[in-house]
Length: 349
Image 1: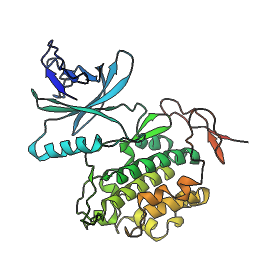
Image 2: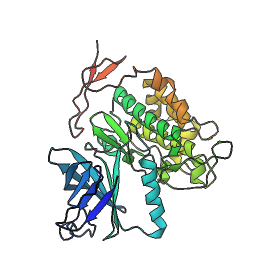
Image 3: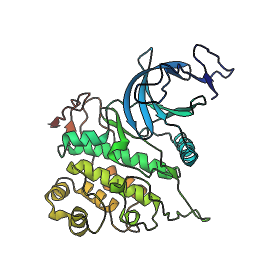
Image 4: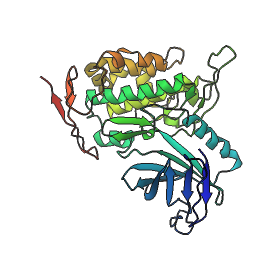
């Protein structure tokens, strides 16, 4: 795909039929109080998408929705001017992300560079139904087991695929899981993702890299000892699943002085919420306890999680959304609403 950056009111296409074009109007593309140029429109293939509304911002820059004349939407992430220190990280994100193609990973649609202003843009699939963090905060521990199972299986499939493809995410958490519709979640944000480091015998090597979100660090990573990056991902995903099950973050750090982590490490069943999970869904409890084992040598791999009884046997592995489908115990009716306002559980006869 060739890229053409053009000045206002000048439109020139290359001979490449798949060319992507950014039309920049520098006076109107800079939003007040942001100082971040946002293109008025971009092309994906032959379809033009126009700037719509801001949906996020942070240290990286801003994210806008872009809408086509047909109502289709994409998301455009504007990277602030990159320094020599992080330009390689940006390039690495693009290299890794564009190689990932999975139904539960946000699709990478392209990268553009505004050489005039020194800004970079990432085009990606739009997920318009919020993230898993806000979903959990809204519903707390009232998420039905069948819905929890459906979400967990999608996330396990996505991270397993990443590891099998030779990459680790390095920042798995509920905030980096997006809903593209009412029952489909996709992993996003590959800014810290990288290749799995292996020795000459293709055995994974331990790393001493402490990137990511500290709450989701493994004990090894928290204390700065070398660890296997794939097992770090397993731990972070296990924490995310446990977070979803009990309705709040299990602990603040996998440290000896964190009382909540100490309770989990010594005897999780002494805490009522963990006990309820173990009684109501023992297959899920076995899954997360193995994903959150304190010793990475014993901790499950993503392959083991993907072949666990919880994923393969505890519910039919057919997905769940659309028409009414019978699960072994319960059916979640499609009544969540566009804002995830409610979840209704209906018994199936």
